[in-house]
Amino acid sequence: MWLTQLLFIFMLSGITTQERFTEEMLIKDLGRGFSSFHFNFVSQSPEYEIPKQHYDIIPKSMFSLLSSYSLEELHLSMVRGYWDSERWGPNFVTAAPVGAEVWSWFKPGTVNVDQAWFELTHALSGQFCASLNRLSEKAYSVSPKWSFRPTGISKLTDTSNTSTLLRYAQMPGEGLCSENFTPWVKLLPCKNLKGLSTLLIPTSLFRSNYNALTLGLRRICWDVTCSVVGLELVQTLTVVFDRRLLYGSTNVPWSVHGLLGSTVEGSCSAAHSSQIFVLCGPVSTKLTEFPTQDDRYNVNTSTGDSRIQAVFASVDVSTGNGKRMMISPAFTDEKTTETLPLMSVHKYLTGSGTSDGGIRALLISRADFTLTAVYMDMIPWYTQVLFSTLSVQMRLENSGDWKIVKPVKSHLLPSLSRQRMGLMELVLSIPARHHVAISYKFRRVLQRWSEYPPDANHGYFLPAATVSYQIPRSELTRLQQRLPAAYRELVLPNWASTYAEYFNNSPVGAPHRPGDGFVRVPSAVVLISMPTPDFSMPFNALCIVCSVIALLFGSVHKVTAGQLVAVLPNEGGPKLVRVVRKIIQRIRVLGGKRKCVEPAAEPVTKVKDE
Image (cartoon, rainbow, N blue to C red; front, side):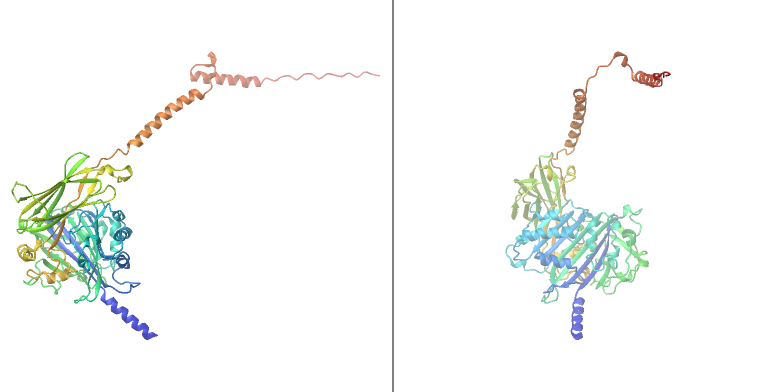
């Protein structure tokens, strides 16, 4: 019996050692007084054929999402603020629009994708304390055809119509707060008690200019031959601080403790690796009071990645040394056209009034080669688009002549009132250094009084537009060699789960792998005003009517229901005279009662003598 138990313990220990957890933090000075921190927590576990009752690294709730709702992949992001790529450079992750964004792939053969999506959004709503359950309706979700690709290993590429297995939704008005942050932190093996997660203090994080919280769940190859499939849970947090609000000058040395309000306390025993990367930015910086660098990363030779300035093990950054680590800005590199993003997208509102309006999107390509891009825009049902007004124009950079062009192919799905979200996908072939303008008009739809949000006069947020494009492999190496280290791409490709793996295998000139060069750029959300009734009018009218009725009814009721009694002339007069008269009358009454009335004499009976 004891041999069986011992064998079972050895089997469990072998499985436990297979599960991995990695935590990383990236520090980068973005220039102009902005400092960024990026946390990357990666949990990996083999996918067991028989579900376990207990998991060591990945929470059981995440496994339940995959098995209960036939999920192939899941991506969730909640963003507060807007990442300005033209000022801050490339993002650490694929930039997500402001608010909440959810998109997921379902397994081929799923019987009812809509029902699975309905249950998934409700589960995420309860898991992360957000209003994601609204996204379950077709009036808020779409199924794009060309804008999204699977990031993990899947059989979706073998199916002919994969768009039916994809659901995508945005909620621009959803805010990111500590109620969403707390359940996200609890998914980590060490919570926020040990390791790099001890730097995550909500009071410090939410005083920043930009917060982006993401969660990704996908399937990966567990070994080189991909004979075993594994599950990967990626949790990232990106924070950008404006030092001008916290320090007297942008040239003053700043520290991790000064911005995040904490230091690394201890080490997470579940972490297979825990490291801190200091990246090169547009501002040349000097590190002081930092521990010895990690020798596993050769960042000073020509074979190392030039984007890394220093690498440290988080265990070496003790509580005492963490407060003394300072980063001193030296000078700022000048921005050029080559350092700007390869493509930018801007979406804004046109027209005036609350009846009709329009949308104009401007795509700016700075590439010196032709790009094939997919423009995707979601159309809410309360803004009915007139597709007859859709116009696509193109012009050369610094040229004022716009020419009407036709997209390579398009997918237009009109919205249905209170039933379906509209979708617009345009595949565009953009020549080198060209601008593309996409415009259309829409008509605002009147809503029922019960459909307005609590703050209806604030307006409505239209979902952000996204542009997806693939950089040709022949141009990737040339772009890497041309761009300075501070402006090279930092988004992890599909083949890399951690930055340690990415930096060690992606120096300049390294061979490219499948998934490299795919970029998706969101625009800012658009705020529009809708025809909104005066919700205070019924209350005001009710108060006025009730007051008038009370005054009229009271006076009329007194006249009609009261009894008329004649009053003698001597009983009239001012109130004071009547009071004095009543007092005198009362005294007279009391004086009359005091007079005694003499009793009658009793008759005397005389007795005669006999």
